[in-house]
Length: 246
Image 1 (tube, rainbow, N blue to C red):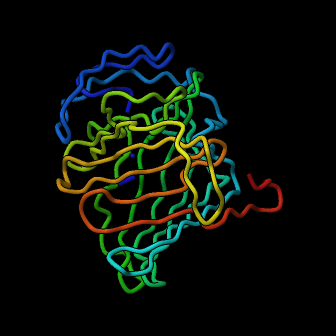
Image 2: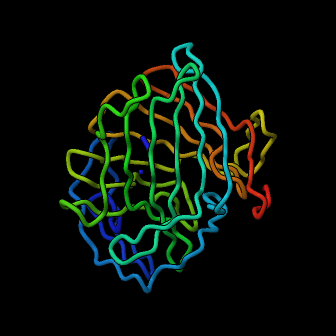
């Protein structure tokens, strides 16, 4: 599960980020209320402390899934894609299982003037034996009723569930901030200002994931709470010649 202007059975105004949220029991999801996207409300830099996207940066997370070694390599490219008039950063995710590529995805993100990071869609491919076998889960905001959602709040607080993406029947990830100020140690280092978010998808019942985000870094740990036993943690961060490493 990776990632609308809208909340669960509520609304979000981009500029002031006015919300009217309704708490719902997991994994229920209510219809989203569409909100007009104004490109003027967005900026071209994504510097949210918990979700910074610096072009040229590559993060590697390694771990296992049901005992099989897995790795996720995430690169913030220098490319952009315009969606609904908004210039979005293009992030390239590659998933490996036992050394073989199993998933190849392009994610699209943008940050508004208040510092909230929005998820505008993804183009994902499942890979088998070096060949793409399907694109299930791909979606783009503004196409076939899909809408962008929030991947990271500017001022994250423990609270009600919210939608990260909304493409009916295709991508409906939900999230809830469950802890802040956590101390977490992974292979890359020890962190004391960690935000923990629980994620699930009504289209994939029985699977619940928890992601930990360190201020100034981004995601450092992903692990399942329900479903297959899977865990990956941040191993290293690389950058191209023009990009400083956090």
